[in-house]
Length: 374
Image 1 (tube, rainbow, N blue to C red):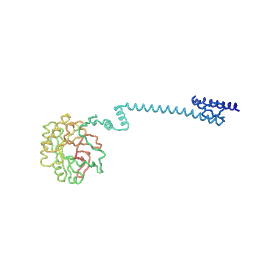
Image 2 (cartoon, rainbow, N blue to C red; image 1 turned 30 degrees about the vertical axis):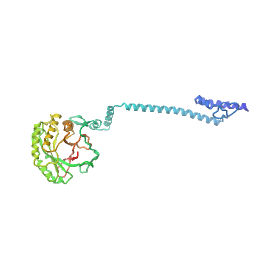
Image 3 (cartoon, rainbow, N blue to C red; image 1 turned 45 degrees about the vertical axis):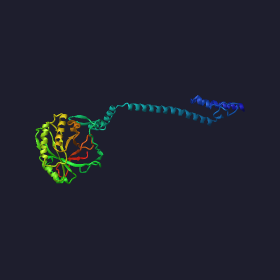
Image 4 (cartoon, rainbow, N blue to C red; image 1 turned 180 degrees about the horizontal axis):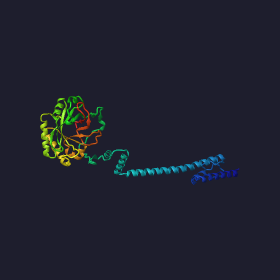
């Protein structure tokens, strides 16, 4: 009985070894699973699994187990290789991303904006935030933002656009006053009707200099507008459209202006209107430095006469016509007809619309917000 048992045990061991060889199982695992029969003892000290006679079902089970181990090894290798490749590619992407320069990132952003159908000016303003960008005279102008200057803190989220076309600005810490500006272009105005609206002040043109002839002209509705506006309880200020090309002409304009204002009390500023005109004008050959010096001289003269000076301009004037850093001491009245507050510098009065409608005024009229605390 002992010899027969050893023979059957050896046959079982041989069958195990054949299965293991077919599945390419490591020699270490093979040694663990082989059992040496010692002294006819089925449970020798060196065995891991008990050795017994393998029935057909046992052989099949062993084959399935070994096959699963083999397949699992292959899958682990494949998946491990893919994971390694993915990690490697991720690292490469990360490295590539870290190597993108700010200029390349900007160019990619510009490409994306254009592909989305954005306009050129909108795109340039988005990707050149360090500049004020405008389009004028068939080219784009870039004016570096000077952070050392007074900047505005307006927030577009605080703008309220009313159903009557007027705008408001809601800020609990900031006084906001609504007003209009007018000239002879509006013709006769029913100031009593205006006073019944939410308009609290009026900026009235006092005079202008012809941009071709250079002739000084009093606005033909100045006295009527000023007197009637004040009579109806509105606060008033005045403005002058200047085309002075020398300090002598500034003196001439201020002299005429103070003569016109002598009989009236003016609560709001006296404004120098700095604008360029389309086509030929007598100031078009002034350099930015020359024009800036004349406007500063103008403000000094107005201040000496006892009035509060203010400068009116739009974004073109800020970029092309004036050096605002040299005019930091004076309040500004800025014209821009959107609520994005793209222009960075500080201003105290905002002309936000030139197509406003107000009871008592025929046709369009300029609408303004004044921030006296700024």
